[in-house]
Length: 248
Length: 385
Ligand SMILES: Nc1ncnc2c1ncn2[C@@H]1O[C@H](COP(=O)(O)OP(=O)(O)O)[C@@H](O)[C@H]1O
Ligand SMILES: [Mg+2]
Image (cartoon, rainbow over all chains, first blue to last red; front, side, top):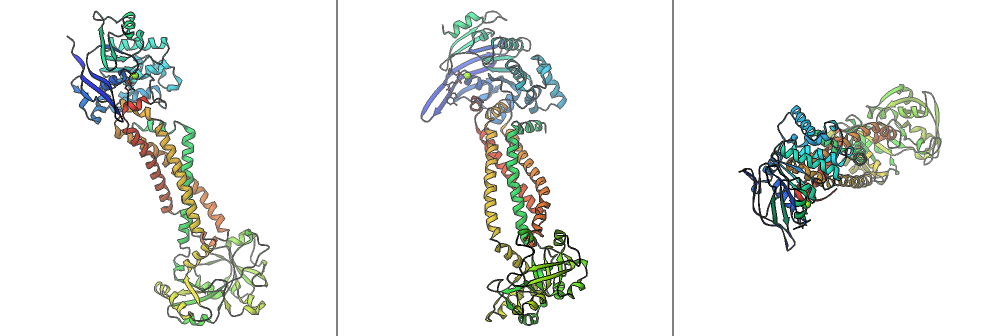
């Protein structure tokens, strides 16, 4: 039995605007095992990003508990949470969100600046991360000198620079053409299988979801479906993902 | 320290804007320095401490009214008075009335003048040649240079208030605070215009002590209070400053306008810096996602805007140092020479300028810094662009 890395217990997330209360997540519970590759699907506005933010510790639930490993993320102080994020989570955004004035290398080095590593160690680690995403020849390029796919690969290198156990990705292929998107998916798959990363990925795209080994379907703040691929190393498969996305 | 490259790159992420911002910091800095220097110069002592003991007696109503020469005896008898001399404004014109041909022209009492203004040095010719020649002129070093005069040269002052033409010979050249003046024996005027005999524009007193200098103005004025020509006695500094303010209450007007200009420009640069931070809401949210804490982000943004304003102050300082001698030279050759002589690179003025500039940088940086740190991370990430 694999042990759970993420435990979401009865989480409610509400936004209050004036007197109106908007319930985005409505008593959601979910467990993600260590080493799982989970795709999170669901219509726009169903609360996917919100859930991802809660898991990554950049947002807090209105009620309920979220545990990642032994840490109760939902009750940490803001400062402790920042430190926790820098050590335990890598975040991959739809729009890459690289710092435009820094080179690829410097962007990847950014999270390492928060560690106690020496300059030489930081350099080694950032270069290793960039080698993993096959961008060793672009260290000194600025984001504007890179293609979208390359930018996203730099962003992935930044996410894995500190070697966190958990990677969260919010529609990482949403802004890419299908070929670049495919490269990103292959890369995520490798991070999962070769480096043992636990990955939670939000996506609209059945082809992207098909790469995952488990598919969680969210609708109006509740879990609608939770499908695991059969077999240890299997993938969900495009047909199954498309069927789930279509809500069947 | 390892964050320094990030701060520097961020600073120049939009070069044009950063340069404009720095320019908008340099400008008020410059205004503050010029203004502060002028105001400080008003209070500066250019006589090496000697002016402290000098008092000026004039007619209570205005400088245009004369007082009787007979006052001299009575003033000289007052306890604490060491010496007395006479200075009469002559006016008139040299060549024409254009501003570049304006300089101070005084009828004086040569021997006592040199005693009372003993910080003045004769650098060419001999004092005795001047004091013994009724139509001799003692000329400031700067004026000599302006007209290319040499000892023995003759020039004519055409009278206006005093309708008489004076033909004077340069006998000696002096170095002092106002080096654009011409001084000649007042008897030269009296001889040609018997009407003005016995009339004095100002008496200059040298007091024996600082104590006496404080006491004497009241004593002198009390003595002539009920006469036909009551007097107003003040220190040399008060007298000079009164002169400057006569030129149109420069001090207040200049201060007011310049402060307003400086403030407006400071607001503009503060706004530019705030805009720069606002544009980076997403980036700040990303940094925080990576684990950058609020204190670190605040520090980075503040460092950035401080660096920006420090650069502005630094450039301003350099420009002011370059401009200062030009400015001073220009004023020294103008009718304001008397008080331009007190101009220097006052450290307190420069420090005030740097201080104000850094403060603006701090204030301009702190508001957006706190605001973007206060915002929740998901909110910051949601804002695209
Ligand atoms: N800060 C907020 N204030 C109010 N409503 C919000 C806020 N953030 C998200 N929402 C709302 O929560 C719902 C879910 O948003 P989100 O998690 O981004 O959905 P998804 O990523 O699945 O498209 C949406 O209806 C959105 O408008
Ligand atoms: Mg979303």
